[in-house]
Image 1 (cartoon, one colour):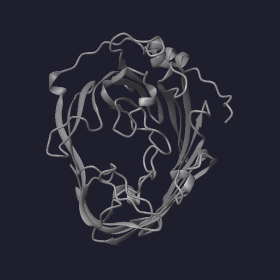
Image 2 (cartoon, helix red, strand yellow; image 1 turned 90 degrees about the vertical axis):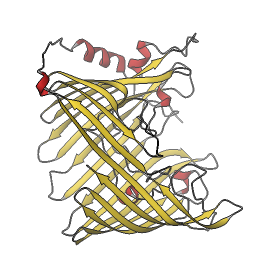
Image 3 (cartoon, one colour; image 1 turned 180 degrees about the vertical axis):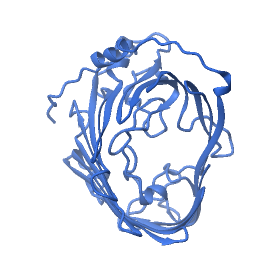
Length: 406
């Protein structure tokens, strides 16, 4: 593959942001502080799941979240005033209290619209672009898109298990946390994000995680509301080279959300352009839905150019999805989702055809649903838990989904 001509100047941008920050003092009244908690979780009990490990072929039960592993039992503790706060997202997924879900951070707002955040896990969701519908909220099919596929969420620190950004670290350094600064005024948003790594013991020169390296591998972006149209955003995501120790490259991610131009239409389209085509490939993504009375159809397109297939040949990776939600009234909704991935997208011989048909009932703070899902490939999750389908076979499941929020 040829090298892209795009060059980045993340260090200059980062230094400009830092130098421009004013020093502000402020005081707070103790009675302004509020302590609160909230919660979200999802569990999927599947009493009937096809199972085939090559030696045993049967029907088994499973207990999962949408992404596999175990049901998510999560909650959040927050303490905040007008200018200072803390957020701790925790979970009890396997009966053991863990503080590793999503965010753990301190935030300080030295003046209106400007916020500094620091912690082991820090997210900034204001500009994020997703395509989460259908099976994304049930049992996910392997390699399906749903979150961050339009505009990647700005984040710092260890991440949430999917985007740990290990590629952004030096070879022997460990991510200890991160910091995000952001400015939000009206419809304008700007942010900068950095990982904080520990240089544990003597380092080779190329492995040392310096301040210069941190700036090179930061995440920087802006977004702005366009009246009567939607939201435009663009960012640079710095990363560690997978080929040259100590080197960095980046991905330019731009997206346009159209949700104000036509009533009931939601459309979000994004593009990911690597500054080095030897590291990553160009990706185009689109998601849309359109509410038509009681029916809301969904569609998603994800195209990755020059991706290697199972034989090492380059081709176009295609991921397509269509589905619909049908409101039956009294909180009942029929959910359908059909997915197609070609062989290049999965780097296998057959690709994937998958489908979901389900019905759910919503309440003021939760949902329960039952469905039927099938795939010619497999469901998402760890290898020991994942159901694989041999060529020509179909893996299937009957999921019962329970979800809550407070």
